[in-house]
Image 1 (tube, one colour):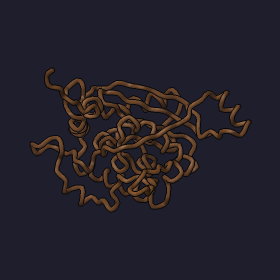
Image 2 (cartoon, one colour):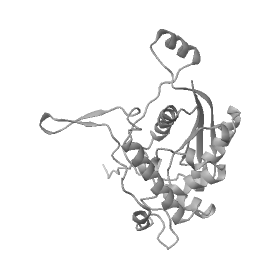
Image 3 (cartoon, helix red, strand yellow):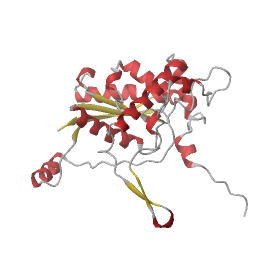
Image 4 (cartoon, one colour):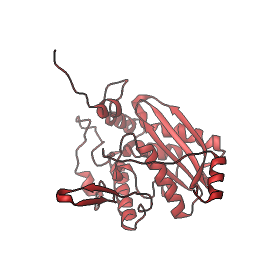
Length: 266
């Protein structure tokens, strides 16, 4: 007896800060204010993400990392999904500038639907095994490795600015790997929001030509629960495609966490 309430678990567990009970978009606004990231800079970053993804899709860069999925259609037809549908080709700085802030309406808001990642469906997978098992399978010809895991790190930050989690995480992972920034060929940093992405890039002092070379989550989308694996898969294929050797993948996590992993092609 009595009423029941359905709770959107993605909104509650994935997009709402458990400590302050507000949307992750507010944490992006907090980052923008604390690190002086302007609306114009956020829109420029978002436009670049969309344009890089458009160029990557047009040149077939993602084809090797995507497994086509057959979806049953009407009257027995089958639709094959082999291309990400979320990117908005033709996005410009001007089109992004017309969008209104989503989370703060007092005239100071800077985070919009255009400079934030999209919520979409997605899946990714990797096969991880010990070096000994890998060698056994490689000798038998049953498996060819893409890379080895060199190091990883997890860090905590103030939940109010959870988007800066990759800053200490990347630094810690690099220290464990005994790498310096200039020794890394490519970075894949999950673009939860342009505000936090720019704060991370600036604070770490990264070369933007090495970061998200095929665009990021602002263009491709942010499938909650799959993004960490997705950016790693994209990084591994990007390293192979560009003949790079070392890569770093990192993302922020609601609640104030940062994760990073260093990989090296073998």
